[in-house]
Image (cartoon, helix red, strand yellow):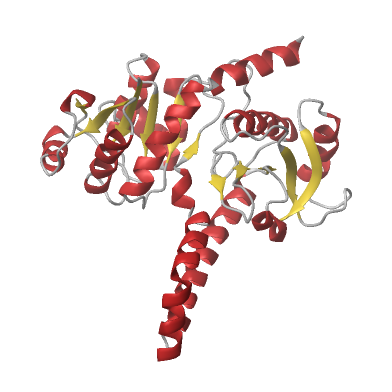
Length: 334
């Protein structure tokens, strides 16, 4: 059984969608135990709407909430009874195997490092979401945790990302590319130019060179390495473009009677294609390099995204990703 502490108060749709997603996760999987962390009255009010296995869902009281706009470091230190701090302490004290939150990204990142703690040897802990492509999903690492990363950090990101893709996604020899403005080795900013030869010389990864943003949706690499500023721009552009295209497709199909007939004919195929490119299918972004598992989901996550973020914790724990990262770093020192 995997015990997952869930921040019931974090995100735009808390606690309604968080509780709904948690209950659905318990219904879908028999190997998950949920701890809903937050204000007991609010959580109980939402739980009363559902029928579920009460032996596998419990409430861990937390009276405070860290708002999205609040300064992360100060909030983690002063709001000791917040849902984020209490949830992270569940992981630290081994009362939970994982923590999932749709709340403040900054607070989750800071709290993850200060409370859960980094694996010895990990220099920076990156956020690593799976993003859809025409082939299989790729791992974007980092997408928001380290905007001032150095070359040595990116090399570690590549190693951690390769471990994740190999053991979670089943990719035998993950192709690693570095996000760049051109395919040529001499292109890029100072960070990319400094990192490229280090990745090229790294024997632990299958480095394929530079990857341009336009090639990412075509699945050219299994792991896309970048610092957080670039990664976040890629991720947000990805999401925005997907929503814009979907809106325009719907508008075009429903603009005429002929279009509506065509929409009925292509609906089954279109539904399958859209599902493949739905980022919510892949859950949240794990914060790799921590002693325990911490997953950050979108602040606007609905119940489906919460469910998938919880379920992805099972594979992460079963495949012992944190342990594998620790072993990989230990081998580097030999």
